[in-house]
Amino acid sequence: MEENHLLSVDAVQKILNRSRASVYRYANTDPLLMNPPFDPNRLNPEIRDHKEAALMFHPNEVARFAQDVLGIKQVTIEVSPPAETVTHQLLQQILAELQSIRALLKAQS
Image (cartoon, rainbow, N blue to C red):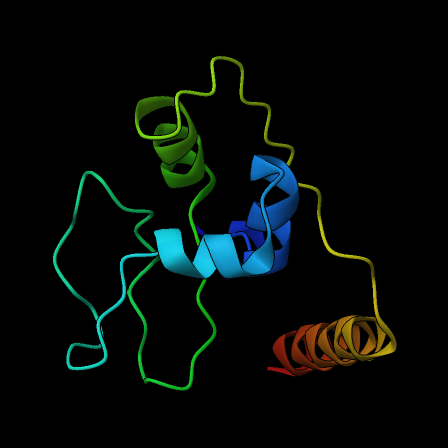
């Protein structure tokens, strides 16, 4: 799954209708282990590359936790694409330019 489709602590907080502190208490984290093993009674974040990386959660894991652990019957999770930023627009323009350069080079050879 792309990182864009993962949920931040803020998004999980809104979905579960709980405080930010509660989400951190629910999260399966350990100060001694960067990626602790799966715990069916905790909210398991995605694997992190380094300790400073933000906790991110897969939507299916949030739904599982809400239903199985918190007992919430109906869970609706909407994953919307992130708003297009100036950086994203610039990267799209660079990609288009590189693709046109590649097409020109192919045509010349």
